[in-house]
Image 1 (tube, rainbow, N blue to C red):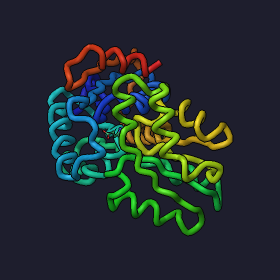
Image 2 (image 1 turned 90 degrees about the vertical axis):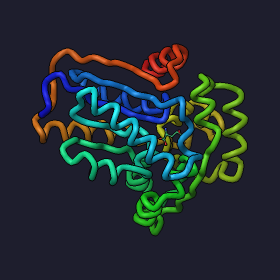
Image 3 (image 1 turned 30 degrees about the vertical axis):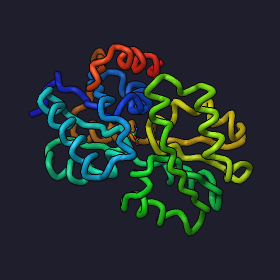
Image 4 (image 1 turned 135 degrees about the horizontal axis):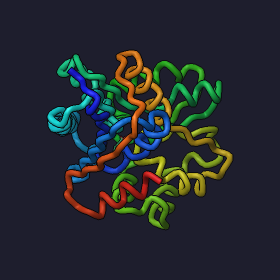
Length: 253
Ligand code: DGL
């Protein structure tokens, strides 16, 4: 039974899900949010599917004990590893998972040249293969696994010379050849400035944060669980490190 006090839990492997939380709070300001970043175990994207599934279930279990009415998996990697199993395990709970915004990109750029940047695991999984298959007949879709970005964002270096150097290497084969880049990992929107510096302002950057927030609102409304009171936010991190809590609040702005 959900009560007025129940939280919307937002989960990611670290601080990346804050990019989704920003949209959630804009779309539903009257909610109580509980953000949990599992930075002690980040990055997820270079782990096996089994490892990510176990970590995601451990986090979901802990969050369930806090009293939640919805779980937003604000991590593309955890969504691809565990979303179906999570929904099966918690049939009463609203479970939303973020996915790379390829549909948004294909709608905006019919026949366009699109690059999906994500963790190696997201791009390797069946869920992404099925998504890509829906759009790669009409558009040219490049997959760009981008290990290393998450670590830089987690260490507060999203907009730094180190990030520029990493991105220059990753994008070297695609410069001048892209209409849009899909930021298929929730950490990447924090590197948007650096990505635009490397690719030029003419390349559109898209992510699934807004769509995920709207879908969460739609589901809560349908279940008559939307709150319009005074919102609140609690941020927790498995690393127990004040620097990461501070970074999370900074990234929210
Ligand atoms: N932020 C996560 C995502 O959206 C992954 C980061 C990680 O590799 O831990 O995919």
